[in-house]
Length: 244
Image 1: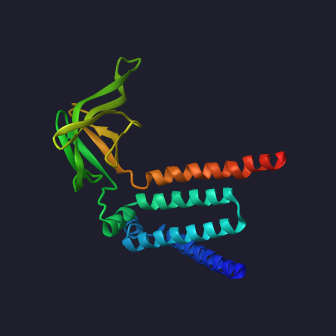
Image 2: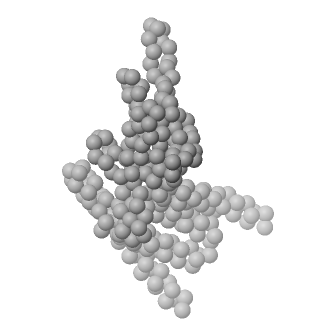
Image 3: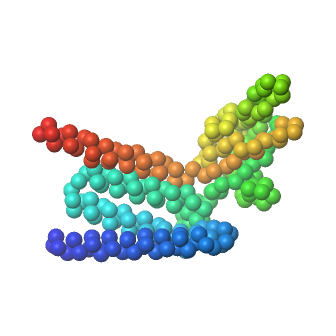
C-alpha cells in the first residue's frame, strides 16, 4: 500500500511539474507577442481553467509530499504557497470571469471613477476614462476635495497630497465615510478605492481607482502561513530538538 501511495504521489508530482513547465514556456513565448494579444491570451477563460487546475495539482502534490514526510512545517509552507498562488489567480481578470461564469459572482477587477464635488457616482470606467466597465453596488459621494501644498523658496506651491472626503451611499442612506489620501484607500463592499488623480485646474472633481479585493485575503493568509512555516522549520524546530 505505501508503494502504491508513493507511485501516485510521484505521478501527481511529475504531472504538476509538466504543467508548470508548460506555463513557463507560454510565459516566455508571450514575451515576444504584441501586448494586446498577450493580455487577451493570459486573461482567457481557457487559461484561467488551466491555472486553477494547476493550483489543485500543486496542492495535491505538495500535501501528499508533506504528509508522506510527516513534517508539519513543510505542510504549513506548502499550504501557504498554494493560497498565494490561488489567491493571485482569483484576483486576476480571468479569475473574475471564471467566478462569474461558474459561481455567478460578478465583480469589476479594476477601473476608475470620476466624481464631481457634492455628487455621487457608481459608474466604473476603463483606464482611458471613456468606456464604462460596470457599476458598483453602492454609490460614492464626494463631500469635499482639496490639495495640500509644499511651499518652495520661490513662494510657489507644489502639491504635497490630494485628499477626497467621501461617503458611501447605499439604498439612499449614508453607511460609511472616509478621507481618502494617497496610500490610504477606502475599503468597502469588496472593493478598495484609491486616490488616483484629480482636477488639477479647479479641483472640482476627483478620480479614484477601484480594485476588487477578490483573492486578497487568501494571499495574505498564504504569506502568514509561509512565514509561520519557515520560522517553525528553521528556528523553532531546531530549538526544540536541542532542548530534547
